[in-house]
Image (cartoon, rainbow, N blue to C red; front, side, top):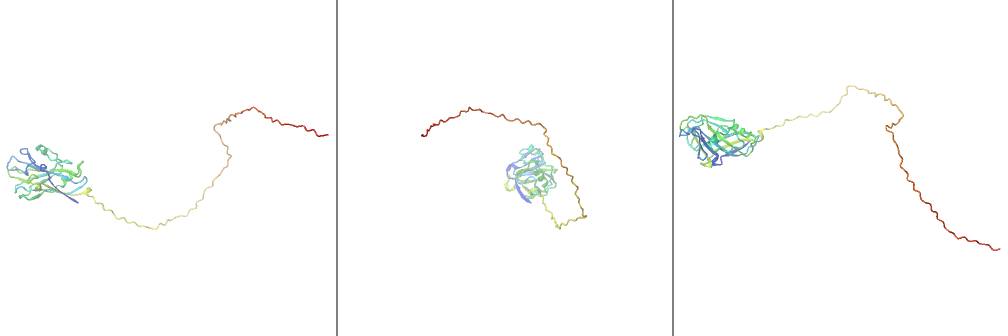
Length: 263
């Protein structure tokens, strides 16, 4: 199992928006949930974006939670519901409509009666691993993508002062919202091979009944072989060329002498 510790790293990556008067801010030094002192700021919601989430598709989320640092001491009742923008690589909304109309994950976590906060103390959310798992399982998700967490009002009394205020990145980078994720790579499946016992035995074939096999008699018939030519064959001898030459005999003259013997 691997632990990934993330923290908001840009001023524009944390924001709040109020449904009571449709206001929005991503430059405030605080982020809010609930109903602020000005009662027109009711149903205030918070969002924050984490970059470089190095969890791959198919990884198993074992645990996940976020941390916020209290910007004020407050014990009044606050109810919240946690989700995330349902996108493989979410951008931080920059307007009220962008924040309010974004598609949320199916997985949500209801956090009613949020505990009281003390100024400058870090507070950890409930378990939100199902939300992170849904994001990782989205088609198109890849390691290094970004995600946006939503913490929205869930029926907090619309009475002034019923809210929680946390530090934002604009107030101090070290005080920005955090997200911790424990995950197991590759789906977290461990395969343990089973031991196979192999027994060797001497092979002793058994013949149940002896059998005598008598081969049959093979009859052999001799016949005169008469080849058959299916197609008549005509043999045409080649033409002989005869060349006649004139005979020219050669005569050789020899001188003959008559010798008369003496009487």
